[in-house]
Image 1 (tube, helix red, strand yellow):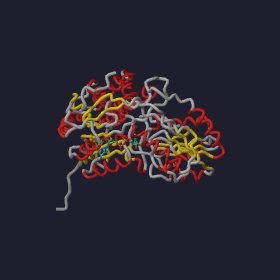
Image 2 (cartoon, protein in one colour):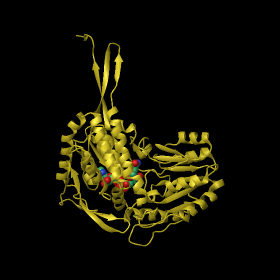
Image 3 (cartoon, rainbow, N blue to C red):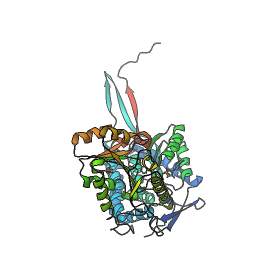
Image 4 (cartoon, rainbow, N blue to C red):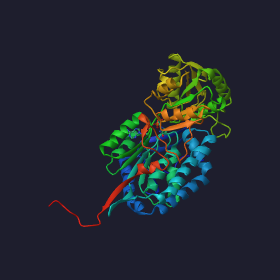
Length: 483
Ligand code: NAD
């Protein structure tokens, strides 16, 4: 497959290059080989993207929702038709196994385009009767949106931000993570091919400085970031200067509670999905697994047996179920936490090592006897390192589960229905799971509480974050004034 894109940026309906920007090498995580080079956006490229987005937005916002939705749904169809090629590219960009990318990336992006394409025609204001007078509200676009992505789900993030923005009549400039710059260009190409007018979905490459230049530009009305909490703080503060709308999808250190009456096989499946999918590089992962002491040893031994069946290897092989980390840097971060876990007294029960070779591979890793104060239980690792903590009492474990700055997700495994809902109600987290983990359907709101974020992506809730209401008061009789 050709991994070098036609050019680095996609602006105003075409590929655009400017090799005077800083070169960014794209590395295939499975081999460490360079597979493409793109160039960071220069001020001239940023200017071109923002002025195209600004110029194209008014006519798009004035179209009917049905017209806008038709284009998004067509893009969803094209995306599904090209799922194989898009999945291979996603695997090159991120190193995630094709077994995952073929069912979780372009497919999830297409779901977002289809869902928001379908909803576009039903976006309305309301009529509010006030005696003889009345008010009507108009749901209007925000204007120019900026999307900034993380590297773990480059196609999905480009669509989760683009689809609702476009459905509501906005234009968007999207900056992918510098680690995974390839996939968003394909999203732009497909939208354009589906009939999206030029200038409405632009992609510019670059590091944090490019993101910062976009966020502070006065022509930008809304910023949606997927990234870490420290970046979120900076971007939120910069957006506040211009009183811009924001959505912040940030990090997590989510709890998963496995009660003594849980189906152990399902709980182990949840722990695997919530710790080792995408080699653990998922924001909502349930990395603090609280297991009731009565079933702890049974849980740990079944987990180890099942981890032993993971197929670690070439991510392009459909049999491979566990791929490399996205980068050497991310690999080193995860390995560093393994050393901290050992030094702080946790018991290593599975994995713990890098895997020799040119790629950025490590073993899925499990620590038991983890305590709440250890670094591996408090800090987001963003790698395949699971911490198992003991508990016996429900009230005690709830307090411990919520004792974190984060609030992205949380899960509970139990056969007791009343307990499951009681626990879900008490979790301080934006997405909670009962007897499952890490599902993220487009129909459901997704986002964080506490430091994990602001606003929600997906579902009808996202509409409120990509549009604004105007109230129009209509007087039906003569107007009295004091003088
Ligand atoms: P990161 O915070 O390092 O970078 C995210 C993006 O922000 C990148 O595109 C980067 O170039 C850009 N950026 C950096 N500094 C900036 C600045 N000052 N102004 C504007 N843009 C700037 O995160 P990452 O390492 O790419 O991704 C991993 C993090 O993302 C983890 O914390 C993970 O939990 C989080 N994440 C959250 C979600 C979610 O939906 N909540 C999803 C995926 C990842």
